[in-house]
Length: 344
Image (cartoon, rainbow, N blue to C red; front, side):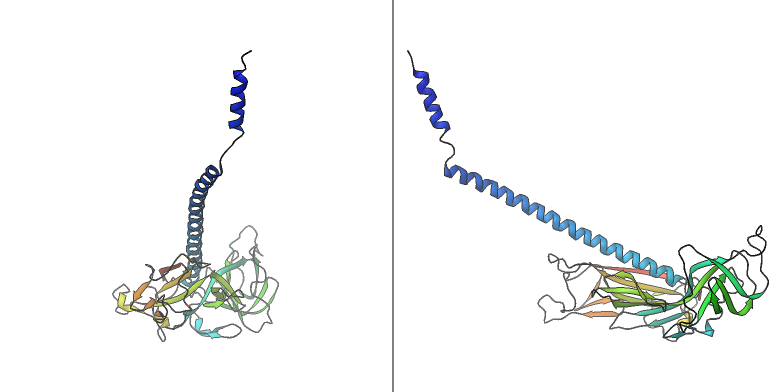
């Protein structure tokens, strides 16, 4: 009997049980390791780029949202109070006799207070002919209003220590009215007025824009209406303003007619230029901000409007220790023309 096929099967079984050599395994692992290092490197780079882009987009959105609210309120400066601002408007700490009060500085962010009735809180209640929602009410010092759904107690506690003012539109004169007392939505004024049912009611407030640091040490731009400061935008590094008016009466505001400090000329101001410098929420250690195209480089200083951020020449990175150069930064500039004051 020919048993050669048993011999061949035995030889095949011997080689199949032999497997891979250690050298073969090491070569394979080295190749796979090199591939994995490359893949991980690519994924890490893509992940870092993704988060960097996400941080930049968040920074730009934060800047634009803050700027939008700034523009809307500043544009309305003097609304509802331009005709009698000389009576003075006060909050807990300050009194104002101008619709614009600017505090300029070349070493710290600027500060601006505008007096305005920009926020509608309700409407005059229809208490006579329900078939005529726009009927004029008899002259009286007592009015009733219907509050907007998202508004409650808009004029605050009557015993809080500072005056309350409102503006009723439409009106022949843009004058604010002083509230003597209030009981829910029934307001007693210090003077008799004729109002139209359905007219919009605005609260007059001094709105102050200024920088502050929140409880998490984040630099913010805030708005204070006398009842406390609220954040407009976070991670704001600088807030600067310039003021312009047509001094030569040629119908335009020329480049030489913009000033950083309008002291004594507030009643002439026709437009305000806003500079808002925003930084990313977190530093990017792969990024080095030696010179951002959005900022103006002058020697060894960054200049935003008239505010100079001095660079420390002793720092090997060229920037001082309070200016972290690993943050992304975004500077916006816009001009706001005032609707209710000193119109061209």
